[in-house]
Image (cartoon, rainbow, N blue to C red):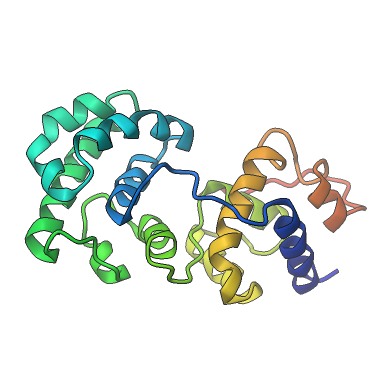
Length: 217
């Protein structure tokens, strides 16, 4: 079975399992989504969702976030990893949004990636989920499963993103990004499946004998 056929099976399998995938990060608008995604770097969505309600109760827009100040931002997010750097980035990006973008989260990759703490993956998530732009953000789960399902060589996350975009219809990128993440967390985990155990892996590779190692991003 070639990877084009596997991609069709993957699409249908995940669509049946997660027909309407929700964004896993608590947010109300583009700004709160942006902040939540920045906070999620090297941190679980579950942990981010535990702290953002208190943060957003105090500051749910750039002006309130700047008024809140870096020290207070840090006090509200100190439970998560890299809190000190993230508090600086959230304060600085909020100020930049006020100064350069009239208080509105910019809606292009180029502009988003000028914001502190915002790389390509973060910009992709915001473009997809806040503005409906078709993107395929690649996180650790997607990078791992794309290799496990032999859809990419996994040299780096940008190569994985490029390979997936070639395989899947553009109209399904935004949902597939979420569907693969959920599947990687719930069924095809790093320790729970080595490419031979979960339902989708067994469907794609019924005769696979050896565990699949993956190249970390």
